[in-house]
Image 1 (spheres, helix red, strand yellow):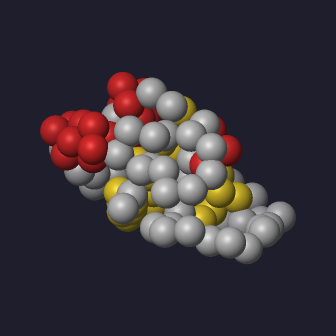
Image 2 (image 1 turned 60 degrees about the horizontal axis):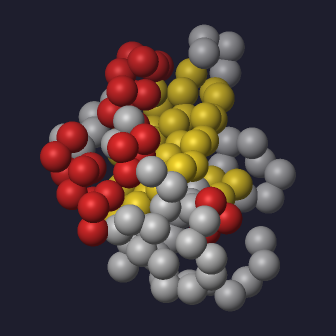
Length: 111
């Protein structure tokens, strides 16, 4: 089953924990950071097929400083679908620019 982590503020797992999660779930990665720019909330989302980039979430969180509201990190183990970026969570939810979805297992529904 995939590894799906989320947190509030800039508190995050250790580098070792992210590296372990990425090593045992190597089929794609993604993360989102919800942050405040002083005028409102922004959401940055990234996807990669490379574990080294995925553990870079820690550096990303540090770069936002105390502006981080929440974050989500996903390491995929493919149970269905292609092993490429299309299977990497988080996925945007509808037309809301501040909502994403990460899940374990298969969702046969079309978003």
